[in-house]
Length: 165
Image: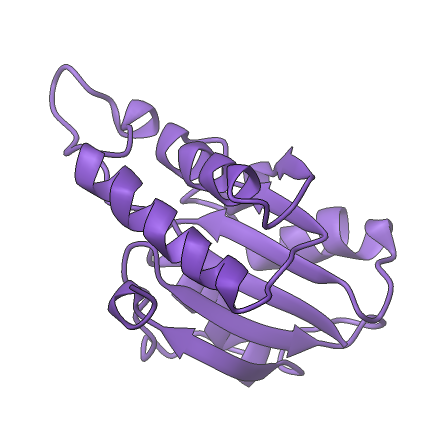
């Protein structure tokens, strides 16, 4: 099984007329909280083979914090993790072609409601709008390394950041 860790970006600036959504950066508080979460994950012994991130600034900054904390040495931009990303396209165009080993651990840094919807599709085969992922929170799902993972995942972790601080 491949372990996927769906991680929502940290607290970011509010979109305004001067700051477009895709350019929003982590706030000072968002950066500090995300750094604390990353340090806690490291203390728990987590290490990701790759951190895939949405191309939006706040997600990239969150992914960079994970890498800087030593949770991974690889970071890759993945357009499928943008707010309008489609899980089916991600599976076919990103996950399956990479042919990951069974014990691979991947961090996917993105946005809500996309990540919680993805988690539902991976576990239940469809979005049910039941899961909520807080900023800097994480959902862990084990998926089979072969065949479509949709509806075949096993959730093993759902935690808001307050339980990691």
